[in-house]
Image (cartoon, rainbow, N blue to C red; front, side):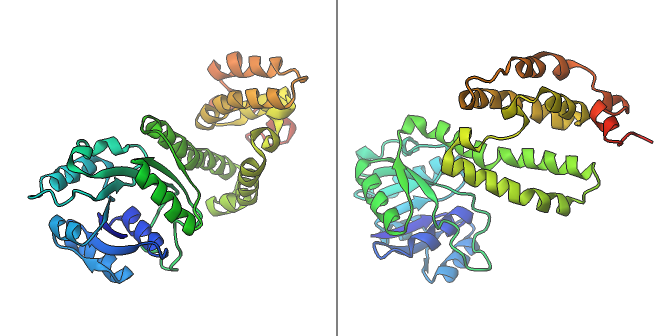
Length: 312
């Protein structure tokens, strides 16, 4: 099976570098506008650079359209308008997390098997300087023509990747879940760093201080689940500590702390069904969220005063 890539950006290059490791397929090459990106990718992977869509179609059995989501439909229009329908009998897919194979409208009538395959992995570079495989161990969501998803599952399995076939209707929710796990924690970690900076840490020292805890909690969650991984004042129903936290935090940090602490309550209650969380729920639901916190007006919280950290 010869796979050609239309699009030589970060995902296209990472996918090509990963899939070429399998003995089941070969990478025929890249087509890209502008062409310099295709040339760079082709040289890096020792494959061909194609100068037209017709050329890459002629030399491939499968096409992966690895362009930005908004451009996938336009690339498909160009493919389906090629004279003589040369894509008949081919498999055509994309790597978007949000879009399904339905973006390839009319594919069945053209004799094309349509699919999507999305790596649940952040790809930050086209070709890392250290040569690492950015998709090693990544999970893939597969969707589309069953013949394609079965073959791709076997291909990915040969590379050590786990995969799962999902419904087209679930793609957007699937991608939202991936974004929640991949992107949203960065806002929370950044708020923690900024809070530590207000305690005298440098930014780099704050990140390093948080590293072990973040990594440990992520591993604990993945291995044992939310209930087992949850610790801290919300899990303990420690109203006094949560109140002190809310009093001490900046408005920006509180805007994250409060709703996320409320979300933790249901996990904590499931973990400790005999523990009373009513007072903590009331604290998070009514008072402090809409009141003027002492630190906003330049005064310090009760906990800070007890700790001797007043504004002098």
